[in-house]
Amino acid sequence: AIQLTQSPSFLSASVGDRVTITCRASQGIRNALAWYQQKPGKPPQLLIFDASSLESGVPSRFRGSGSGADFTLTINGLRPEDFATYYCQQFETYPQFTFGPGTTVDVK
Amino acid sequence: EEHLVQSGAEVRKPGESLKISCKGSGQSFTSYWIAWVRQVPGQGLEWVGLISPGGDSRYSPSFEGQVTISGDRSMATAYLQWSSLRASDSGIYYCARRGGGSGNLLDQWGQGTLVTVSS
Image (cartoon, rainbow over all chains, first blue to last red; front, side, top):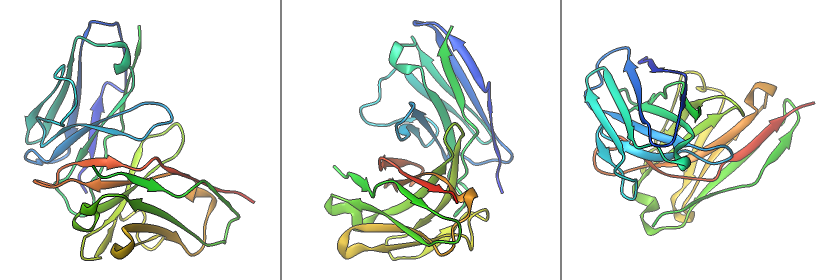
């Protein structure tokens, strides 16, 4: 089964910062990767699919990049509502579409 | 727009059975795969499995044999059930729609169902 790792696990940042989260797959997954944001007590919300496509309604400060085994989620100009936990998920190996362990972005 | 509405929180004892539901509101529900994801409070997301529009269910190895995913497309409802619960089954269970196009996305999520298994 494909394993996903995320780094860092925790990240302290300030409003206005540029934040970068990485997701690495244990083998190549082409561009079959999505990113989600989750806030406490809420379900995850889709941000990015196909590694770099922005979901409708998601602010353009969120950017996904990468292919193969290495992927990045970048938030340009962190806003107060962006403090949350972020997960990547791979869709390469049906039917086991595993998630990364998550990265929590909190206030510095 | 599709909305997924899940059944309410449940409390059961070990060994009991349970079936939770996820109801779609849009006409497109019958065309999409529906996935189930578990989250133990304070922890990450775990892939449980999914059901195809044709009713074919597949599971993560961690959940194979422990749960059953089913669906009633005429009622736009998907189900996740247990025949004999264990304490380790406790958690929040989300249903989610696998989006169209490449399918590399879960684009609509239910609000979650908290399952508590305790003696």
